[in-house]
Length: 280
Image 1: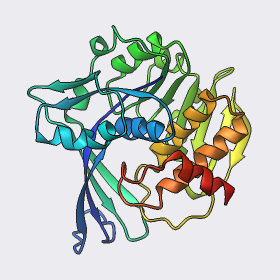
Image 2: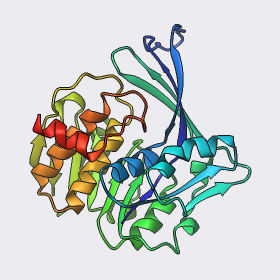
Image 3: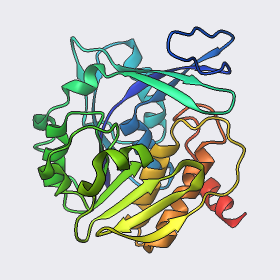
Image 4: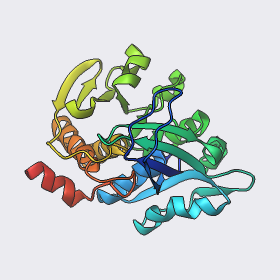
């Protein structure tokens, strides 16, 4: 069982117009609403890749909550540890997507910021995925309870205590986040994956690069959710016992498959889609 400790958002996506510069207004965009949040995305990605998944999260006791959780319910993700909080709003992400598929994102965390260590202290956790869109005390409490693999997606980049990093078997970052954390990412025996966008990804162990992979060519529609899929797919592959190179190759292909459809959660691929892309 994989337990994800992370965020739940409703994504409001404006697509089809150029991304604005500071102080600029652009028009002609199309509006869509999608379930999102990095924690929810990662939970759904792992479920679609064939794993049993539970989500520890917080949402507001409002109309947006069920819309944000809809695809997770449909995929069979266990939401028994997802808390509905009075006086808080469900998290919202405001996303602009250019015609080329690049994006800008502003997040209003809402209830995500209210998830606490007490929400996980009685939970039984085997493998754990965590992301920094929820408070660090909740992540640390969950990581200490985990009996299997502990994987942390250090996004968005922000200061993280050494006590949390010490609990991680796998850290996943993009290039910007890797530059922010620097040498603190690497420790003896720890795996660190660095995603490189269209250039693929690298896997490091104890400060030494041990694998790299490039994604298959796809037509990019929307890159939202690709990083979450990469993180979930890499963790799933390692839990399944794939070697490091095979796990990284699988994760890169899963991330690429996500880019072929619009929206964060609607674009997350089934395992068969990833395997078909790898065969191609």
